Structures are given as structure tokens and as C-alpha cells.
Amino acid sequence: MSIQAIQILMPVYNAEKYIDEAIASLQAQTYADWELLAIDDGSTDQSLDKLREWQVKDNRICIRTRQNQGLVATLNELTEWSTSPIIARMDADDISHPERLEKQLAALERLDRPGVVASWVSLFGAKQANWHYRELDSDIRMLMLFGRAPQAIASLLADRLVFEKHSFIPSHTHLEELDFFLRLTQDPTFSLYSVQQFLYCYRQHANSICYQHANYRIAHYKKRFAVFLRQHAKELTEAQIQAYMAFVYDEPMQSASDKTILEEAFKVMLQRYSEQYPNFETELMRRWERYEK
Image (cartoon, rainbow, N blue to C red; front, side, top):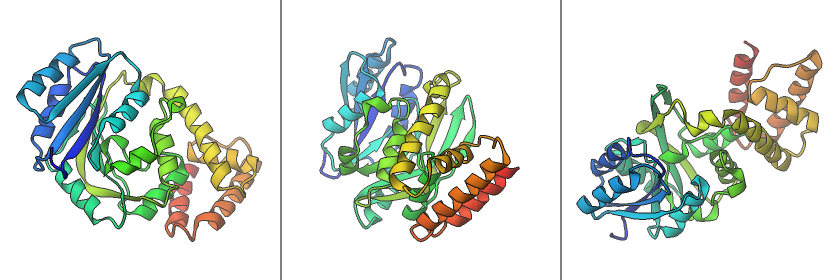
């Protein structure tokens, strides 16, 4: 591995049906100086056998295996295992566009400080959709004020320093992505950027962890986001926080007084963030118009 090689961090758990396609998409990259670090997290299918078959054919593929410890522990171990200054994330059932590494690396090298580069994402499988993400740092950070991850974490290519500083927290299993971005977007040390092209394909499963734990995730998203608001928008009252979260997560208002409280919350948020994020007011009003419908 050269000094400039990108290390791709891939957690693997029961992905035998898809891992061939995932690794083949890496072999098709126009940027060939990469190394795959894959941890088999105690798979009970043939995932490990398939990884070993690939390793025989391509010495850029490195494997570890152990008993199941879960996604968060695996992601942190992958970061600790890595040695390259530049790392990329990829899930074992997804597909990278052939120019993904090349284009994201070029964007990372243009940043004025260490950071992360994502891309637009195409969903396929049980659900088809296109996810567009904002391009520039200020707008990416601003979107965190609406309680959802502003980039797809599996699509990230980043300076390793980012994941060293913002490692995943075991107590936030199933909402590790939201928690990661809540911390990252408040850290001025790093720069954030999204390539405005579809460079990552995310496979949606009908029985995915997201679906299985949907109610858990929503409830804990709200709890984690409430903590964020209390920490960073301290001018909000508790009633305003609850009203703003209901708006963010598209829950109906229960009374006319709720609307008054929400309007007060808007005023506080605008006063707090309009100067920091020039597009915040426009985004807030756009979402309010959609919410009212």
C-alpha cells in the first residue's frame, strides 16, 4: 500500500448474497490505489468464505474475523485498524460508482482543511429513490438543525482524523449516524462537502435493521436531537423544544397554542442561526409551508 492509498472500511455481517457485487464495484474503480479492510462480524452465512476467495484473487483485500460485536464496535475497530491518512466507508451490500474514489478524493484535496466528502446516493432494492445532499459546508451544517443526517455516512471519504476524533458511541446503536453528524457539524476543525453526483448506491432491504428498529430509532432520534437543542440553542424553552421537534419530525399540532409556541421557537432559532447559516430562514420557511399542507 502506498502512502496515498485509500483504505476502505467495510463491516460485514451476513452479506453473502451481495458482497461479490460490492467488492467488484471496488475493483472497477478508476482510482486503483486502494486497500479494503473488511471485518467479518461473526457472520453465520458464507460471507467469510467469499471474502477469503476475493483475498486470494486481490492482495488489496485484508480480512479480520471474530465473534459478533455489533456494528458500532466494528466501525470503531476498523478505524483503529486503518493506517492510511485517508479512509472511505462502504457497506458490504452496497455498490460504489466506478469514479467514486477518484472524484471524492479530488474534492477532499480541494478542501481548505481536513474533512469529509460524501456524494448523492441512489437507493435500490426494496425501495428506489434518489437522495440529494447539499454541496457546501454551511448548508450541510445547517441541515443538522432539522434533525436528520445531512449526508449518507456509508458514502463518506474522509481524513482519518475525523473518525479518530468522532468515534461511534456504543450507547447510540441504531442512531450512530445521527449522533456522529450532530457532533461533526458542531466541530469547526473539519470541513464538509458533498459531490453533486450519484457515486454511491445504497441497497434497501425490506427487513433491514432500519425497518426492524424504526420505532426505536425515531424515539431515540428525538431524544438525541432534544439533547442537541438544549446544548446548542439554549435560548429555547422546553415547550419550544418540544414544539420544534414535532415540526421537524412531521408530527401534527394538537392545539392552536402549539402553533404559537412553534412560532416563538422559530423566532429564537432564526435569531440564533440566521447569521451563521445564511440559507436557514429560506429552508425553515420552505419546510414550514410543506408542514402546513
